[in-house]
Length: 336
Image (cartoon, rainbow, N blue to C red):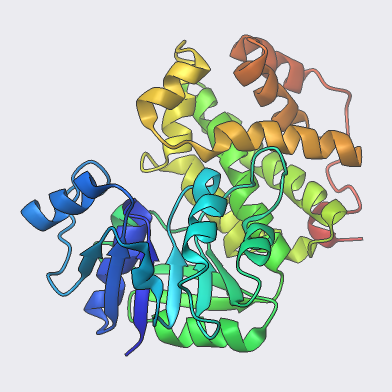
């Protein structure tokens, strides 16, 4: 049995809490929002974030960040925009031997840093890991079989997380490419948002298949330029996460994209859906591609839709009318 605290009472954090508690671990959930903690205490669930999923009574609930002290695993279940703030607040209470695991998928705005870079800066005394892959909270909380990856610069940390959290419905693979796993989980949100736009326009399966295939190429190309292993993007944190996020109505990125394709203004669509990591990540990916001189046509067109007012149908035409290309370019998924 491990002592685990989840920082954040969002859907994924609560689904991890349910799973870990059912597996016999000592679980605490922290939130800065007392209304969410009170709602769980009163009703046994948080309908606004994870409707229908009952939180076991064995899960402790707190708004006191000092409760991270004495825990074996500290799991960050908070949006990327708040990762630095929460880590800085928790840092004085987290013991050096604790392992800190991030589950958020995105890059820090303005700095374009990965969450592991943010954690290294704010929690320099702790060992770190990333947990990512195709894992909708709505399904994980129901015990539906799910497979993801853990990545760390210390393989012993990865093995510890793998052995501690794996169970009959949650299978974890180890991947040594911490950067690639984070980029795959972040950048797939961009393509999922674009896929939703296509759905909102009423386009078909052919279009989405093309978008996803060429989208993973963009992700792989940018990732390789940043130093990631291209093979990573053919795995669970790359194509696996891309598939589930582009195709499911559980995906907030896809749902926001559908609204945009139907004519809703991008900022209004994001406000209506809630946390849409792909919105800010599109801007971040666009900037990274420009810095590294990497061609990312889908990302560029989505950027124009979100931030420059371009008509989505004009973006489809722009993508279809691009100069003719060979498909098997030399760095696609690392193949020479």
